[in-house]
Image (cartoon, rainbow, N blue to C red; front, side, top):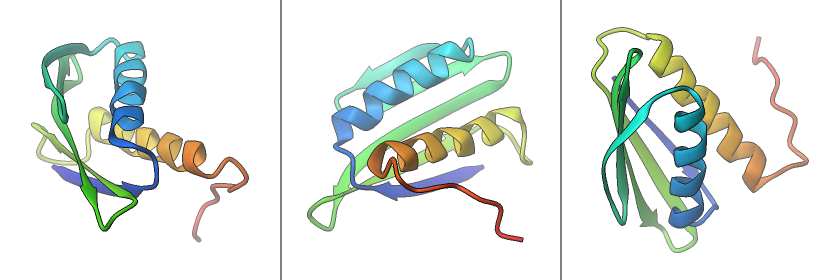
Amino acid sequence: MRHFHRCSLSPDAVLERADRFFGALGLTRGGADARSRTFGGSLGTMTLTVKMEGGHYTFVEVHTDQVGESRIDKNVKKYFNELHRAADPRHQIEAGY
């Protein structure tokens, strides 16, 4: 699946948080460069890339090797929530229903 998120954190901060978040899930960091990371483990494999967009926004894109919404996809969404909280700690995340 493909997921994306825009935030006001720097690309370096996004990647540093990804290393901690996905490492804590037991995923092993594979390939890495200045703007991307690959993680893999029993949950599946995912590739995270970041790029600057529109001046002060960072575009975060994640591709997983899963067909439907799997455990790794749900954890990607949790990671996006963490990025949102880091960018705006006052924001309360609530259900939309």
